[in-house]
Structure formats: structure tokens, C-alpha cells
Image (cartoon, rainbow, N blue to C red; front, top):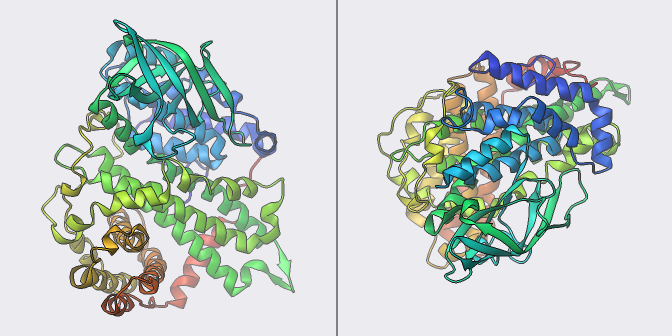
Length: 563
């Protein structure tokens, strides 16, 4: 299941997309690991890659929706996430420039300024990058408290004043979509500024990294109606809807990093002997590699299925609003665990300056903390829990979405309110359709969790305690995670053994989170009793685990060697 650029084993809907992605792979392979590491150590921004993307119209191809640009333009999430996975395979630096450009361009497409959309098309074709001016130094993820102000000067003329912090591409972006408020009314507003304008000050890179994560200031920066994307409540909705679309890519960034790190780790361990034994022959090493592999496969299965739901979304079907933050939150956090397992195997090798692993070990930590923390996304996920468990309804079955079409609804998502009213199909039907041993154990854990919620749910005080709710949210997230993994397996050439091994890991994770609920100081005796009913051991199958290790993990040895 792992992406191998030297085999280019990803599927696309059309030959033009494969050709474009192959050019990206060729560029990175020709650049080589030594050059990638040199740029990373020296914190050199990826000017070469941006020039390459300009030459081959990469951003223009991927980020121009139907109706703008050439006739074949489309916003196709299936190829966007493929590009995210490919670029992250070589390092977050390349993924990040693309990711924050996407954040910067989406507010334009969501807005009502057609002239600015045509300008954006031109900037894309010129190879420009974009930025998303949202967070501020004093407020971070508290987007309600934005101090960026747009002051009315004359009819259609304004002056922008304020600063933004942690803004990717803020050094070079020719259009920085900036979120703020009208000074006279406090109405929300989205407007564009240019990093090359004399009234724009790029103060510094806030991190020592090849990513440029800027602090920028504008002082009496002139803005006209031509630069305003949206005002009022719709500006607020567009800001959140931008994050809905773009936060999704963080999961695929984690997947790409982990894939490269996995190839490198298995090669190192399989070619090393200690105490007269090959490292990969030690039982604990086999378990670490197998767990890392099945976690990575689960990441890919869930994220791929969530893509189907996002591409199929409509005003009547907004299930993607639950699945997207889980891609951002859970898939990226699982990426950290994959890297931790691999690092436990390769040990000191993970600190060396020449291998890729050093990049993966450092940069994987960023992803759960970008576009809002895990806690922020968990709080969002909790809004869906009641309807998911207790009000299932008939919903259309979603097919695999790898077709070449424009994802129209992403630019017409509408108001961001009413998350608690979104409906879901019955998760139980999905689980009941799979009778693998560890899926059955997982089902029993779900049943115990639902009983805890219905018979001994949070009291009034606990309902206001985010620490307690986060513990419940971890269990809820696992249920959704497992559901989409089962759904995704129906569209993949996936062995029952691998799927059962994935649920072996999920059963253990469920037990871990159940113990967290048990250990909360505020948990009642009934809550503790019911949480312990969720603690289960997976069904061990030594032959199955060994088969996966020998036929799917060890066979990755020597399959990808960086140039």
C-alpha cells in the first residue's frame, strides 16, 4: 500500500495528471536526498521547487476550478491529495509551500469578487505562491479576537493596519488573503495584500526552518474594493470553509513523510546485525514494524475514504465535516506514532544528518499542530457525537471518487453553523458487515462506550470540562476511524489478515482511551465501572502477524533507495 515514487504506484483518473505527477517525482529524485538535506539544514526556502512549479504550471493546474483558466481546469481533490502525499514524501518544506498556497487561494474562489478571481488565475499562471493571513501573535487560534483592521478612507478606498503571525509563504506571496475586521463596524472582512508592496513588511521568519512562516505587518496599506474578497458573516463562513477544505491535506502530509521514513528504517534494520542476530529478527522489532505498518495503512485507508465523502458532499450531505477534522487530527497524530515506532527500532540512526529520517522525525511534529491544535479539532468533532450514535438515518452510499471532475460544492458550502444537526448513516451496519475476530472485539467496545454515554454520560460539570470531553472524544474518533477503514477496505485489494491486524491495534487503542476515562478525577463510580467494560484484549493471531511482517513489511526492504 505504500507509495513508492520509483514505481509511481498511485492511481489517477487521467494520463495528464499522471504525467504531471511524474514530473514532480522526477524533479525531486533528480534533486536528490543530499541536496534536500542541505537545504533543510541551512533553512533554505524552496525557490527551485517554486520555479519548477511555475515552469510546469503545477499550481495553476491543481488550484484553478472549472470555469476559470483553461477549459480543462478543475478543482479535483483526488489529485490534490496525491500531490500532497508525493511532495511530503520528500519533506514538509515542499508540501508546505503548496498547502499554504491552497489556503491563500481558496478564500478568493469562495468570495464574490469576480475581478479578483481573474487576477488570481493570472497569478497562478505566472507561478506565484499564496498565503493565508489568519492567526495573530497575541491570539493564535482565537480567530474571534482578530486585531487586523480595515479603515474606510473614501468610497471604495481603505487603509489596512495590523499584523499577522505564523503565516506560511508570507515572504513571497503575491496575494496574501488577510482576515480582519472593518474598523468602523467590527464586521469581518477578507482582503488581499501583496508581500512585495512597499507598505507590507515581512518582519521575520518565526521559525528556523526551510519553511518560511512569517510575521508580517501592514501600516496604512492601501486597499480598494478590487482587493476585497468578502465582508460580513460570509467572510467568517469563507474563513472556516477554507480551513474545512485545506486542513484535509495535513493527513496526506503525514502519510508521505511516514512512507519515506518507513522505507529508510526497514532498509537500515534489515541490513544490520547486533549480538549475532539481524535486527529484524528480534520479536520486539517485528512487533514495532508491524504496528507501524498497519497504522500507516490505516491512515491511508481512512484519509482516502474521507476524500470520497468530501468530493461527494452537498447541502444535504455534510458528513465530510466530521471526517475532515479527523484526517487533520487523527491521521497526523497516528503519523507521530508511526515515526516513534520506527525510531525505537533505528535508535541513534534517527539523529544522523545524512538520512531522510531526521527530517521526518522533526517535521511530523508540526502537522497535528497546524491549522488549529488537536484539541481544537477534537472539540469540533464532539459536536457530531449525539447524531452519529443516537440518530442514524438513511444516507446515500458513497462510491470511490477518483473521477476527473470539479468538486463544485467545496466552493458553495454555505453557512458554517448547524454542525450539531448534521446526520449520518448507521455506523452499526458497517461494523456488522465485517466479522473478523478483532472487528468483533472492537464492536463490543463500541457497544460499551455507547452504554456509557447513554446510561452514565457526562454530568453538568463534566459537560463543561474540556479535559473530560477530550477523553470521550478520543473513543468517538476511534469509532469513526474504524468505520471508514472498513468502508475503504471494500474498495481496495486488502487482505482480511491486514484488516484484522489494523483492528488489533485499534482494540488496544480503545482500551488505552477507556483507561483514561477511568482515571479522570471527576469520573463517577458508574462511569469507572462502564469504562472498564470497554477494556478488551485483541484476539492474538501469531501466524497472521508473522505473515504480514514477512510478506508485507520485510518485502519493502530495498524497494526504495533515495538518490
